[in-house]
Length: 258
Image 1 (tube, rainbow, N blue to C red):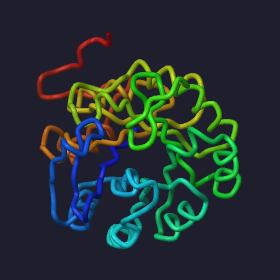
Image 2 (image 1 turned 45 degrees about the horizontal axis):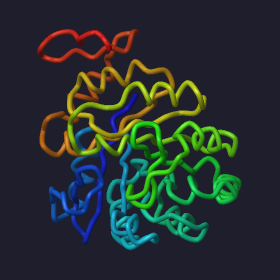
Image 3 (image 1 turned 60 degrees about the vertical axis):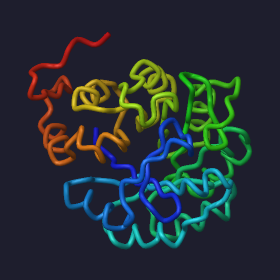
């Protein structure tokens, strides 16, 4: 499993939102390009870049800035999302040089679009399965559907998407720990590579996720920006994890999984 730093863009700055709420924004940098380069220098193997303005507007708003970030960290692979709700928007996102486009709301609401976008760019499409627990959240996490993340995950699998990105939106930016149970259930149900996100606050949290079969990456935001997780140390520990996938922190061994 790899750690994937999140670079969330709003009004040209690097920010984090608590549970996706615009009224709970923390600005971490006025220079997102420099921040992305910093994560690369510290050993990141991939970046997760989100156009938050685009996510709320329903169409990309910061394509030029995304392009600058991708160019600045090249050849580090980048996945980019935020407002990618039609084929043209997905195509423009990939034209920035991003390795993957992350599609969420439209893919969850429109199975036909999901099939079409995967048919066009299958190896470059990551489907964001955002949930309040196991139920799907869409439109910048402002609306919750009756469908489950497994329902959408299975459709993504059948459409031959490259991977799933599961975020428990109730935990995003809170530091309360990831939803390991739903992440594991999703990974078992879909047999696709899964990227986890939401609530990660420590090396122990990364260790629990690293134990889940099928979880190949973890997107981390606030914990990296506040220093709760040192990226270089996390990369080192993940690279030297035991065969059981345990990470050890300065406090000693991980507590048993609940």
